[in-house]
Image (cartoon, rainbow, N blue to C red):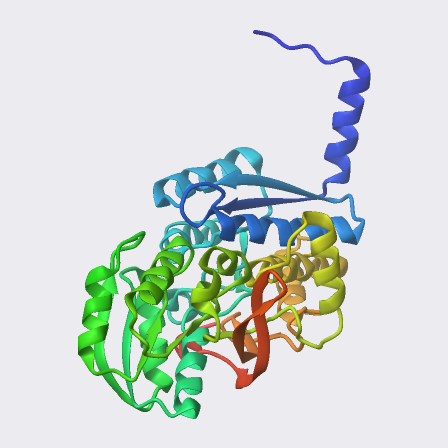
Length: 376
């Protein structure tokens, strides 16, 4: 069917195209398992764009359904048909590994608001790839450092068997000075943890470290609480973040987890971000929302300094990271991954809301273990 647009509509479209000097393609998880993470990244990113008042940035948003083949197809469409300048949004590391190397090889910039696989921090680094969240190991390394301070000597550790899960256990072991009672990899998307909890019970461990993001973490924590096993749990923020805690409830109270951000972090701009996010979306922001917000503000700061069509100048503007991060001091290391402080925080209840309260730094001015392998 042929469609005809009136002159007024054509003029409006032309004005919009003229205003949108920079086109951003956001591929993220908006349905199925992990959808809450992608929604938070999207909402944080778009909040920063809207608060900036700029009309020269267009964001095209698509759902990857947490499927690598879908993410690859969407990236191809965005690069070839939508002609985006910058890509962002991917939550899961297996999708990042499927999409980012191809996108950067085609001259596109990729700003990661979440996934930071080790393969892309070391030898697989690229001048057009910037991670605005962390390298996958970082929060787990901080959990290992906290476990040392807490006096734990024998940890049972578990994570899903995919790149981020492997990086998680590697990171924890890198900093934890005690022994490992057992090391278990679960299936990605697993919901029944009876067998693993039985292993924990019999392991002789004095602590449990786990990385199970999204719905996996919710299932594990509820089943762990119901099991009666009373071994203390330590983990990264991914299983204790704002969107997850309401579903977990009392089972998470008192658990210490690690994060580079929290809603009560006393740094310029953070309280304003929390207030604006609540006003816009009717919920407290999560770690993922803060990462989306920072990613957009990094992009906007670079656009203030250079045109995206001048790749060399735009890359240098991104490297400068001249923006107010809601996590405080922020800088890129030589492999374009953050150098930042990672904190310990505790799950508490405030009225009817389960949330996190900052305890203090677990690792200060921390970078990653792979930067030396990056040839940039």
